[in-house]
Image (tube, rainbow, N blue to C red; front, side):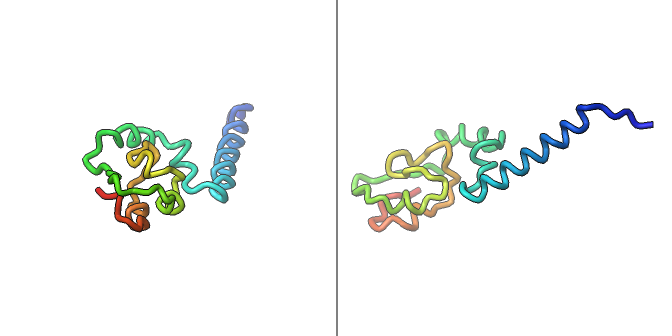
Length: 103
């Protein structure tokens, strides 16, 4: 005989609510789970400051904003190229017209 408790139904509700929230957020935000909920993403983000794969911005950068427009994580690479939210996709490097951003 199964012992049904009110917490069993609450667990299903919480799971459905969590899944629905992340699904709806993904319509408007790139990688919402990784950006806001993932504990591994937080762990990796802490190490962006000491990563051997750091991005550098030369003084030749005129802050045109092309790298910011290409960044799916919504950061400004010319201000903080090693942001904790950066996933090192390299799109900002590819989009930079002056090649001011590099590894």
